[in-house]
Length: 288
Image (cartoon, rainbow, N blue to C red; front, top):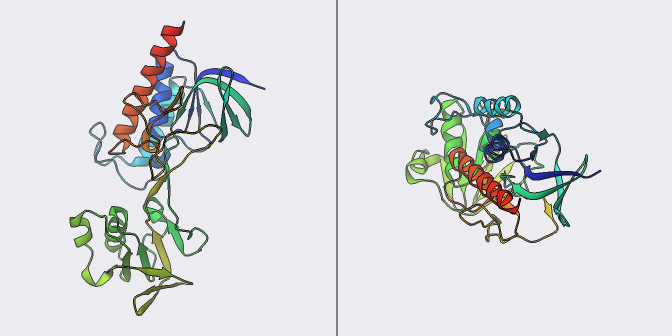
C-alpha cells in the first residue's frame, strides 16, 4: 500500500534528524526512515564532542545521539523503523521501497552517510573495522596491528597506548595523517610501505609480524541505497550537490557525509539538513 508524503528522508544521523525536525516545525509532511538508532555514527562513537560549541566538551557522542532521538519524538517528527531498499522515479515524484512496503514522496533526501571501508577483511574474526569499533578491544591484551595511514589509525594507536596495550604496530601503505598525529606514533611501531595480511600474520618487506587483533582504518565510503536513476558522483563515490544540497536528479537532495562537501562533521551535516529543508519548503510553497 502506497503512502504519500511531501518528503521522505533516508537516514537518521545528524543531517537527516535535523532535516526532519526543521521540516516538521515549518509544517511540511515528512517521514524519516531509519532502521537503527537515531544519531548515525554519533550513536556508535565512543568519543566526546569537544569540537561542538553547543555542548560541553565532555558530552559524549552517544549522549548527543540520545538527545536527537528525544527531540524528534517530543516534537512530533514522523519516523519509520525501516530500511530503504530501493528508490524509483514515479508519476508523483518518487517511490521509496522498504521491507514494510512502498511509499510515495514528492522529494527524497538522502542522508545515508558513510560506511567503513573493509579492505575485504570484515570476515576475519580478529578484525575490528573502523576506529569507532575500537572500544570492543580497548584494554585487551596481546599483539595488535593497526592498518591504515590516516588520522584514525594514529588515533587508534594513541587510544590503545593510553589504555595500556604494549605490543602495537601501525602499517600504512601511504600516510595521510596529520604530521603531528603520525609523528606521535613511536618510530619502532610504524611501518610505511606495501604489506600483506595473511592468517594472523602481516608480511612487511622481509619480516613477518604475528598479531592477535587488528584495527582496520581504511577510511570511509559513501553509503547509498539502490536507485533506479543515476546521480552525479565524484570519483570516490560521493554525491555531487549544489549550494542548496540538490543533486543532479531533480527532487533528490543529498545531505551530510554522503555528499561531496568539505569538512564532514556533525555541524556541517546539520547545516545541510536546514538548507535542504528550506529549499523544499520554498518549492512546495510556490507550487501551491
